[in-house]
Image (tube, rainbow, N blue to C red; front, top):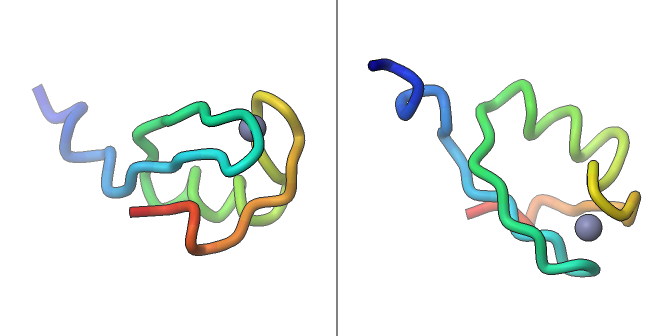
Length: 48
Ligand SMILES: [Zn+2]
């Protein structure tokens, strides 16, 4: 219960194709640090 509400965005990595459901703070972390899987830089367009 409640865990789905935290996933506000779907991130799809343009490099490795990994998709993750993320919340706002995870989105900020991905934009700041890049993909957690492959390390590619991430832009806002990678989020839906
Ligand atoms: Zn990646």
